[in-house]
Image (cartoon, rainbow, N blue to C red; front, side, top):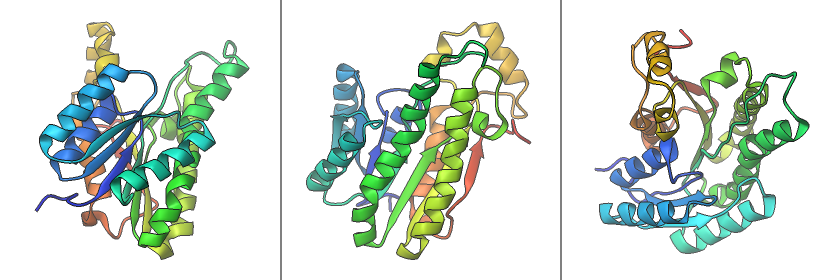
Length: 248
């Protein structure tokens, strides 16, 4: 029995990195996948084809989760197409790093809007169908930086810490309807973005992690599968750090 058989999931920001890894592993566990992307049309088509080849229903939606109306529209389209929304993974995010002295108001606002407001927008968009079903799992992607802070990332850290407080509140509000809300806080995950960095710098980071390696997208995807599945039926309001021991 596949862990996510007959469940439908929305995954935001899924054309690369962690989001892509989650979409593929969800499909392997039997989930039908609706995913969003902002601009990578080709990558979205490729992912859609790959997911369908695994044997599930899949559809990519070009949608800006930071826009309230767009999030509402996305949820109703997915509901029409897939029949239910059982899982929401709020994964879309950006960085605009700079020291506080140099950061602009726009750089602060943009990161809060894309990383934090999008979580509010989509969560609000899916709770009605989830309440009708009396079941649902919401998984919000925070970061190790949201838990410990990081110089040069005050905007990103604030957005990711905000996700933790928001998710706990949602867990308290919706627990009686059997809707669960949890957070995953990834550490240093090796993706296309980190491939562009200097190998010595990356190795330095690996050496500082107790498990002595960077994480892979599948490490995050596996944690998501657990929180999306009935295996975690009695877990809500929690933050799971998937960071190789960085915060230990």
